[in-house]
Length: 425
Image (cartoon, rainbow, N blue to C red; front, side):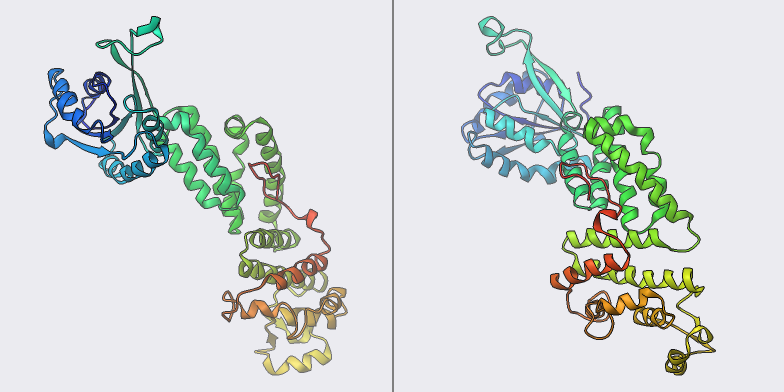
């Protein structure tokens, strides 16, 4: 007999009392939800409750509820109605670790059983099925009355965790890494088998690592991703051999790139590549204001790196006025403070041009200077100083220009792996 002091038993009811009574006797539930149709409603109290009492399971009126499905032959209507049990299951399981939900789908029509199994696949519960040691028709017919026994009791998440994996893959490939990590973390808690726990743990770690990277937290990302190789077999088991190997290969390149950024004493070209790649992801998602903010920062960083590496100007937030060429120095003198001037993006490239750095001239030749520049859209964005959303046309114009300034083509940008069928991006 199963431990039953805190069990909520949800069981489908058909035309035979014996399998339901067998489940009641086995699980000894504290509370029961009988899932029935209009045709079997009266049958519950007239036969099931009475026979259960004869077996020693005394179901008084306060220990069970009736839950009616309008049509036991209609799978869609059964699923629609069963969704209403989500809150009941949640309330029961939230009482504590000692409370369990068991779903027995032996009775009722095939549609009822299928609907109960489909709905329960997302619940933290056990599946129960009543079979028997004796059947009619030489063992292939119905169970002989009196020979019933519970033949299966399993955590559906161990068998049906693939649904969580599919949800994880879809979110991961859409760059919704935090949501994907949450899916994997929740599934990890619900499965029972150690191998399944390990599989969801490696998915959670993978998504958490790329979530940190997507937020420019490179050190946290590196720490999360560097041990994935130790879980390689678990990763292959959950996403498949070929995709797992592809992800592991991509991760080795990703870690090299992360290490380069984490080691750098100053932000440099890898950080610009990272900003551009992040902008591409935001652009692909349709988050154009975010994409613009990252493109703007990448272009600004290009100028800042050029000033530092080629002209020894370390900090554009405080440039010694004496380092500015004559004509430009006179123009900026009024805004200087204690002999230093703070530069915005346009100033950075104006200074580069004044220093005869080719990047400054390329910036102006690309039409990025002045009020007609597509960069002005960033200032009007909600992420800067305005309320005007960035349009597709602005991004389409600015994206190739930014790549050109960085001497890159799109294929040169680092990419995040995907778990579905679309390849890397």
